[in-house]
Length: 547
Image 1 (cartoon, helix red, strand yellow):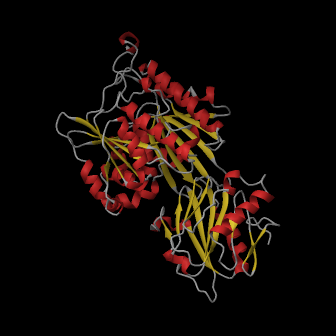
Image 2 (cartoon, rainbow, N blue to C red):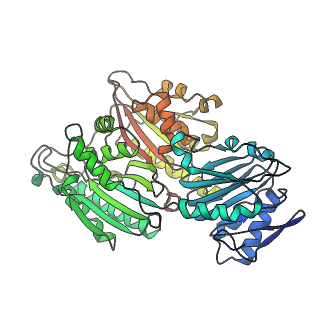
Image 3 (cartoon, rainbow, N blue to C red):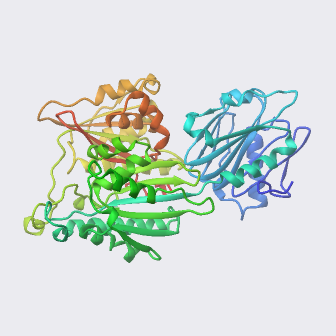
């Protein structure tokens, strides 16, 4: 049957009858009788590879080469994925990540309670269940980890029951309304400036501020060139001098960049002018058209960036106006929020700055004139006091063994470099069992013996939070490195921002930090908290940086 979900001429033989294999930039493997599981998926991928090699990305053909019915991974796919045909397959897991499109999961019989689907980025699920003698399990039994069926995310789960001849119509109808596009918003804090506390026109960038802005402009240019950002792009910057000078670096490196400026982005205290800050948020964080994707680069100031960040993360206006005081972004750092055409907002990174040379990174402006050239050329900075909590998501994802090893090395080198200018070199390393390889590399850098969380930490994350997120003794300085899965790390981060345990769990789907990412939380001796960065992956090999 011809449709956007079918590829005419491709068929695989299932028990008793033929079963279609369709592809739209990816693959659809299905057996009408439900018997084809691992071997059938491999055969389907092989058929696609041999018949339409030019049309299907090479990595797709080998993405499902599994020996046993344990897991099916489909990565880096754009368009449609249909994974189905399970009748009774306990323990089957499907991971679909780093892509936008529609997932159709065809469940049969006991599979309704056996299949777990992990969705990342902008997946939309259509669960097609067949009526008949075999019967089907309730759709509510499907375990969708990333959305956890939170009430506000039920739009991501579409299901229907119907005969086989209606599959295409169902999928087509959903595809027309649910195919996600996105707006990527990159919010850049201006580079370091001098004459802090004086009138705006005196606040020019320091020599380090110019270097920071240059590094960030070059890096964003590389992201565009590698296709990691939607190609349609625009730049909006504050009219203050330090923001203008930072923004001026971007058009030099990023071609075809539409440039605008706005007084609305000038530095403001959201607690005193909440309506102005809210107006900026409402104008910029609009839902993109379903037919288009774009990138908006914003150059502005610490407080307005953090207000918009908090609002994108669902924090109410009155709390968002105060929440910016909990962060301390580094200069020329990148805070990224993705807005889906389906209306959702996802925080990808906050204050990411690993792309900036260590010798140029700063987080405080300079009082008076820039005297660094007369003081040896180094930046004016001091290590954070108290405890620095370094939250590292374990390396992994879609890379080969060698690529993952390279990621681990990059993470270890980057975190070690932070001890040279930002945090104490005296470190404790703790990890979950699945993150031991990454933790071992980090422990080696700090000559530490890694501690292992009990497996129960996944069910009881509060125990880990209470163990390490305690104010150190007065006048002391130390570092705690926690290596784990993203859910545990994000829970700890959100708890450190003053959210309750229940609020933290409910907010998890609003954040998406990549494998090998680094999050920095500074817990001061007086018990106050400053978040320095979240989900920074810019220290990784370029191919490993998420789109």
